[in-house]
Amino acid sequence: MINASAKMLAMRISLTALAILCFSAALFGQAASPTPVLYSEKTLAELKAVRDAAIASDYAYRQTAYLTNNIGPRLSGSAQAQRAVEYVAEEMRKLGLEVRLQELKVPHWERGKETGELVKFVGMAPGSTQKVVLTALGGSIATPESGLTAEIVVVSSYEELNALGRSAVAGKIVLFNGKFDRQMAAAGFGSQAYGQAVQFRSGGAIAAARLGAVAALVRSAGGSQNRLAHTGAMRYDTNVPKIPAAAVSSEDADLIDHLVRMGPTNIRLVLTPRTFPDATSYNVIADLKGSDRPDEIVIVSGHLDSWDLGTGALDDATGIAVSMQVPYLLGQLKLRPKRTIRFIAYMNEENGLVGGTQYAAAESANIQNHFAALESDLGASHPLGFLFAGKPEAMPFFAPLSAILRHHGSGLSRMETGVGADIGPLTRLGVPSFAPWFDTRTYFNYHHNSADTFDKVKPDELARVGSVMAVMAYGLANLERPLPR
Image (tube, rainbow, N blue to C red; front, top):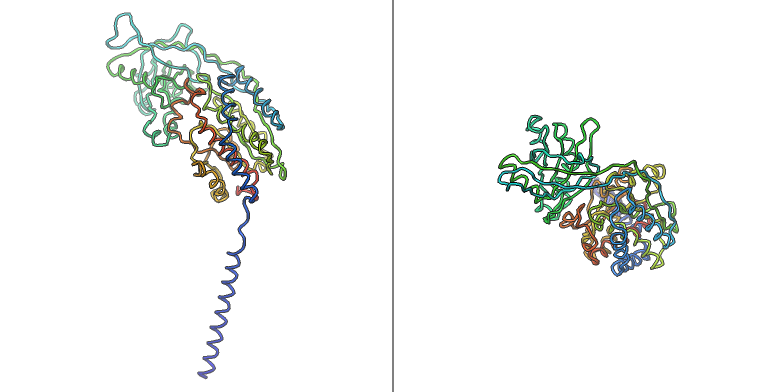
């Protein structure tokens, strides 16, 4: 019995060991099976060529120069905006792309005259005034043609405004003195600093008007220390009276705050903007047809319109130019993507988002064929890599692209909930979305003010941005597997 039991035990041990070996072999076989190919060896070699060609090319720099120096500021509804549409469409036709214009109705607002002067303050010399540097906010109504004079109330938050109440605000002009955090921007969080400051630009006039104010001023929502006023879109509420609204330079906001603390301070404003009926404009859409999957689309894009104080170089001629450069480089290298690469120059990002919204609406039935969307719209400083909005499990798909971009210091990646205003509607419909990850420490020194001009564009940094856009676009267009979505 003892021997039989021992034999039975030995047999059980042997069977168990065999089962373990078979299971291990199965696991080993799974582990040893080839990883599904994301990019072919041919594509990886071509991506390095695309990267290097972008670094060496001056195409995007030349296009930025033409859009800014030759065409100039491109506010929606303006003659310059229309000229930009025509120019970009023709440039894409020269590259052999299939071009179409998507018709839009966009806001048409013109700035007019804008002046401000302090006419009453403690210590003023008899007969004198102090000039204030200001600019009307986009969409603002006008003051009376002869101007508007009233006492100023200064607040730093909506809570502080509401605590004052109607009795302290009615009949006065409210200055929202919410400061742009320059230290935050210097640490690399320029977009976050802007996000904190810009709330007063968009909603300040509504909050002030609810308490009876006759006009609203906001401290410029940017980092400039050169006495420059920062414009941008503001909003009205149909249930609240409309009042004129303007931004003052940060230096003048500090001046006004100082004087108001000493005693009653009055300002005279003359703002003469006009709002016209909506104008006809266009998104420029140009396709480089794919060889294998032409119905699947990878978008490269920026916005063609700009504000009217500068010439819209960093916001967003550079984004348009690096997007234009993608099909140009592929043509130079004689490369054809497997999926269609679609260039889009959106119109009306700055004061309405009509272009991006209407494109997404028109393509909603075809959204599953939109494989990915890229947008460049935060200047042209050194790109750290790229931002991604989509399913977290897609991130490993991009590691080979990051490895290629690491060559010029752009190999980082980070997930965000959204990465661009114009492609935002596509992102919300589930399209995987990308944007260059910019160093934003200095961008908001120029954003929406008169210093946003071509001389701020550095050719070597623009070349790196162009490289990120081109590598990402061609890599996504040639990806061997669908992206999780």
